[in-house]
Image 1: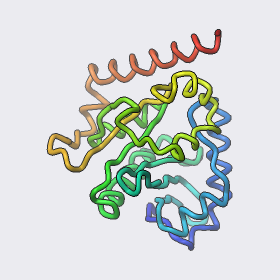
Image 2: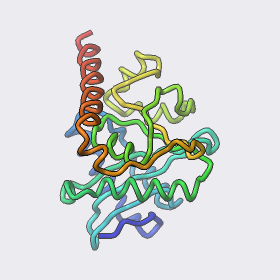
Image 3: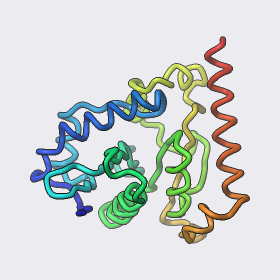
Image 4: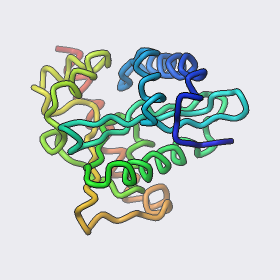
Length: 212
């Protein structure tokens, strides 16, 4: 298994990446914005992505987006092919792209929004902190990227202040950022309860808005 910074040699995987993202979005029904094959190719050409593969078989992917003239960067499109799930690959991809972002964009704040409990835990391992949407980029182009998500109507209803996604932020200039040991998030019962409760609250809000 190879996990590397993507380049033009990986364009052959672009179709598989899009199809895997699309299939996951359909299966989950929430929280994954679709991306075109052309858009994915630009990320490969600009080396703004990390890709995992085994031989000629695509395994996983995540890409970088820059916002507010480089003030923020976001990791988006994290996906693992079904054949390679439950192997800890998502965490390895996130760690790779996190370290790469710090190297390539050392002054940028790193953020993400997600509905996935597993991704929240991985982000916490890396030192991200939960934040309100007001602490994230206000670039309208970023939020426009949510339009293909099934939860976009909720985001509009809440005037872009909240949604089912949780905002998380890593500020490299803050000395209090701590890289947690894996067991602190995955095995500590308090942390499991906190994340589970947060997810349940957001799901309840989603159901309430659907009934309206």
